[in-house]
Amino acid sequence: MAGEPQADCLFCKIVAGDVPATVVRESQEIIAFRDINPQAPTHILVIPKAHYPDAAALAAAEPQLAADVLVEAGEVAAEENIAPSGSGPGTGYRIVFNTGSGAGQTVFHAHAHLLGGRGFNWPPG
Ligand code: 5GP
Ligand code: ZN
Figure 1: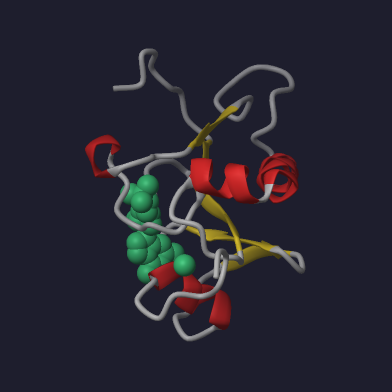
Figure 2: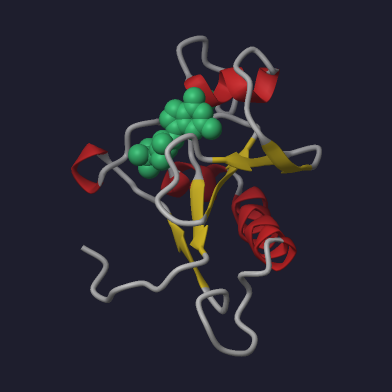
């Protein structure tokens, strides 16, 4: 059934507590934890506890939950002091959904990368 835990999914194992993670925020439906290989001073993964293979599948199946992932990402950004206020490196962040292996997705459980605490280039590469 859509959204059910998958035995071979790393992030489902983190949700279940079978794989440890540094959790920074958790609600009934969403969990946010630090990326094991951070690409910025703040690099947090915000994921629905329900299993969907990518952000588009999540949004198609449960649009409110997809929106809630963005709300949570904003809340985490505020807690991490990377929300855009003032000037300097701590004044903005990126939310990235790698979708498909060609775009760098390696874990096929929908997740938002919240990245901040440094400058960013555009285009992102
Ligand atoms: P993707 O490449 O699918 O967009 O992102 C997967 C992310 O999961 C990567 O940034 C990777 O560093 C992170 N990751 C992989 N394994 C683990 C793990 O066991 N724990 C945590 N916290 N992050 C992980
Ligand atoms: Zn999963």
